[in-house]
Image (tube, rainbow, N blue to C red):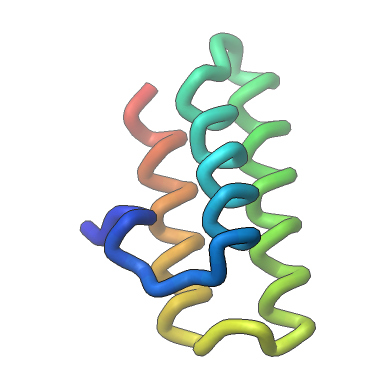
Length: 72
């Protein structure tokens, strides 16, 4: 599985995505986890809609987010 650090992202995207992934990882309850995942996925969907990143990078981001949630 790829890590966020492995992806070539603009610094502003990297910092926001790092914060989202950390929120997912730090969430305690199922509700908090789901909310954090939805917010992170919403951010990635915005990047996808704006065509800021390649489809492969977008897919990798979704996998990273889901992987963070699955570790709970």
